[in-house]
Image 1 (cartoon, rainbow over the protein chains, first blue to last red):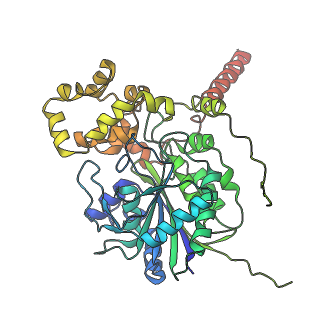
Image 2: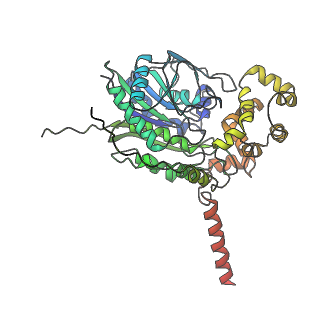
Image 3: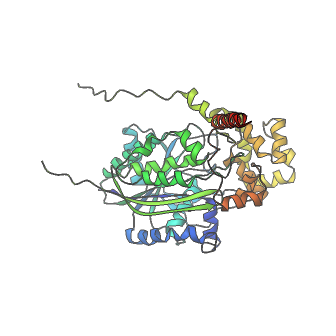
Length: 286
Length: 158
């Protein structure tokens, strides 16, 4: 059967994509950011995941205001990098895994998560920057990707609890897929940042680190954080962190920390990165 | 046939209370449904700049291009002036407005700095120094209460 073997959280600032694409990832500004991903790049080479369920948000690229799906899953064969106004990133096309994606979509709907299904779309920096951070510049991405797009722009966005519960349902769905697949789930976006208004530039190192703490071990406190707290404490765009809760929910009751990194700033944003693995409790025979 | 009704449904959040709290955050316009409705055509105009041929037509004659859209005169003036705070008030959203920054060749952070009361070099330095602190930036009501308390303290001292 397929199983979720690890969860990865990462910011997806577009400037990081620019740094990779222009070969600036070792300079004084970007060096300390990328250094925190070295461990993960090595680890991913050893892990060789077959499929990554990549939870991200579209930034007015594939979706405009005509249609705003709360949760949408990509069931297509492949996706091209989007033109975000300065030409598409020169990165490989993203190959999907339609068999597993359709299996998850069907299972989620039966599990009462009414997903939007996407067959064709372009994917923007929200999806391709985390791939560059974890895999560098390969000729083809080394895993199949199932994009899972979340509305975190138009309010109300989904609650933290709903995101966590969706993660739990994704775990059940993956585990009922008969093929033996090594599946990772990534939650992207955040951490603290505000890109608008007079309060723009807000960052909150202390809160972000508490949030990272809450993803580790057997606590589920993070699922109950209300939207207003993200808005007040982490800036208007910090709400993207609810997407990390889908990742965390999919890892089951307990996690173990494998790697963690935090850096301020990257452009307007606090960079956070975490690698977790699920801890399956031994079932003790009665 | 046995029907398992499961756990009783939890009462939903009150939407009015949920939305009212958003207005208490200093210097922030949360992109609510009301703003999304108001700014629909501003945001769809901005979205149209994703296409190279539209960018070229817009750059050739900004006013003529804007006149093709159902946008108020006030919003057209704000778009021509790149007054992003005014556009946020009219329902613009930064992810859509960023298509206009890109068309202007303006880096995202520099465009964001124009919404603050800082110059771009000042804003960039603030970010390098760790960003804007959440202290004093969480709640308008809390700030007013703290200011009132300070005023009372000063009054006592006199």
